[in-house]
Length: 113
Length: 79
Image (cartoon, each protein chain N blue to C red):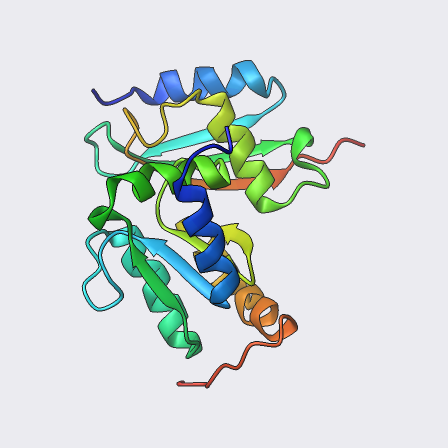
């Protein structure tokens, strides 16, 4: 099950980058409304993150779902931990929990609003 | 192939028998749903775990036949 060669790459990305968003499209041009919603929340928080386009890599697109046991994209990771998909991130953002989580993890955020 | 709201509800019920479920067909196209699920089994589970329980109940349909299912889960308190 963990033989999937793409898992190594995913582990590297989520350990090298504090916040990683596996998404469809790029932060500048999201290709899906759900990915765009998460991009928007992260932008509002003013945090740095790495967006990885799963549409550009079919192995990654399937691999990330297997890695997290989560059937959909986008998927947000903070400090190596899977936080959730679009619904969860949106709820957490509106409840102020995402801000709290990022602060608790000691990640810099610039207030834009 | 889109799924019927009743099929989604049935699959969730099979795995979470005590669940209170409401399903809205967001666009009336049988392809974009929102589901509100309340069950006692969600107690002490993280949101990720709660949603994973629903995805498990849907047995691989999520992300395939079922393109969009916005989920909201909450704990059914048993007293």
